[in-house]
Image (cartoon, rainbow, N blue to C red; front, top):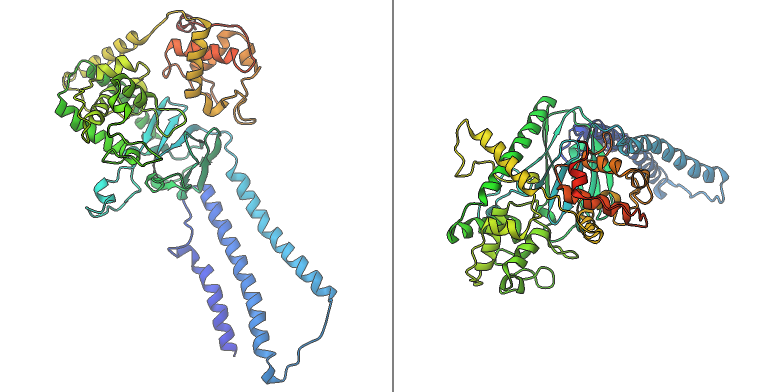
Amino acid sequence: MKQVLYSLLALLFTPPILAADMPLNMTQGVTEISGKVFSLHMTILYICCAIGVVVFGVMIYSIINHRRSKGAVAANFHESTKVEIAWTVVPFVILIIMAIPATKTLIAMEDPSNADITIKVTGSQWKWHYSYFDHDIEFFSLLSTPREQIEGTEAKGENYLLEVDKPLVLPINKKIRFLMTSDDVIHSWWVPAFAVKKDANPGFINEAWTRIDKPGTYRGQCAELCGKDHGFMPIVVEALSEADFESWIQDQKAQASLAAAQAEAALSQTLSMEELMAQGEQIYMARCAACHQPNGAGLPGVFPSLIGSPIIKGPVSGHIDIVLNGKPGTAMQAFAKQLTAAEIAAVVTYERNAWGNDSGDAVQAVDVNSDGSAISVESNTEAPTRLPANLPETADVVPTVESAVAATAEKTVVLDDLTMKELMAMGEKVYLTSCVACHQASGTGLPGAFPSLVGSPVITGPVSDHLDIVINGKAGTAMQAFSAQLTPQQLAAVVTYERNAWGNNSGDAVQASDVDGHGK
């Protein structure tokens, strides 16, 4: 009988002893917090195993030694004060022992203060958008698993459904603060190796943080059911040394300048219908097929069909507008910052001529530029980095690119005066696009995280101070600089809107010339 008891004890104690090496156990991760979470997990596991040993040990002992065949007679006792105290106090003490380390770990997980880098993570159906507040870099990260693998016509790769076209790049040994939000439904940003799992809610900001100890590639995925392509929303993080991260930052800025020059050069190019259709099909399958289906039929009641739809049959300008700016209140996103003018022209051409639509319309990049002046090629870091055909691949490329970017910037600066009504209309649009995620649609912000703009010192103070914080940002906070993201006219409009909306009613009408002359 003793051998049986010893075997049972060994069976109960073996799992926690070997748990760290078990493939199905929680991993230790690569951050200090993930290590604390793992230690907490193992502590609770040991306590649960100890409770199991005691409870089942007493139960098995009682079954064996107090069985009827041995002549045992059941005791007859009632309302034992000692038993009542024991089964109240013992569980209470156990819970306290478990609560102390759990509380310490949870408090550490919720402390994003004194961060070195702040990154806004925005989920949407079905992709992630990353914005580096400290470096004026932003890009979208999409699933890159080939559709052939998804459809089963090719063998699945090593990182099937866990690979993206552009990973989030972070430095090691730096405290990274994440601001999580969403453009549509609830998503959840989850990277197990960091012990970070935080919901991204539309209209709200959630905070998380990490400090990575080891360089490497770490993968995760959306952990909140967010629609039909929830399973196609992976997360890939590349952790680099501090020196390599700085090199990556400089490379991204160079690519952004090159992309701006390329987009400008594309405005003077005229592609054939065959070239537009080939490029458009590729973009459609990567960006649009998830909702509207590869055959353009959509999903009845959810996503509209593009076959003979009013948008397709209507004016080209209306089609371009909805692709550029999206459609409020629906799942149709704005692609102005996701695609270049040439790419939007190609995908619009494809949609208007595929699946029997056969409109014959061949949209060029210059048509998109004229119909959608909201496009900002400077902020689009996703454009391919190869040189356009009309730029020579020689050592003289850099001056050519710089002059093209300078020409673009000079061309887009508009300093016309607008009426208060025009400023407020434009300002509201800019605010709801660029500011609402932090300061909320009502301007009330999020107490403790983002300040309210209703009667705030910035709003009621000098216009020049308000302009300065919008143009240059505020160091040490999540307030980023918008000088490279918005035109002088847009900056003037959003400042005017903030100073007169929600009952602020300052009466200040800021013009683009005020922005252009600020700081000079």
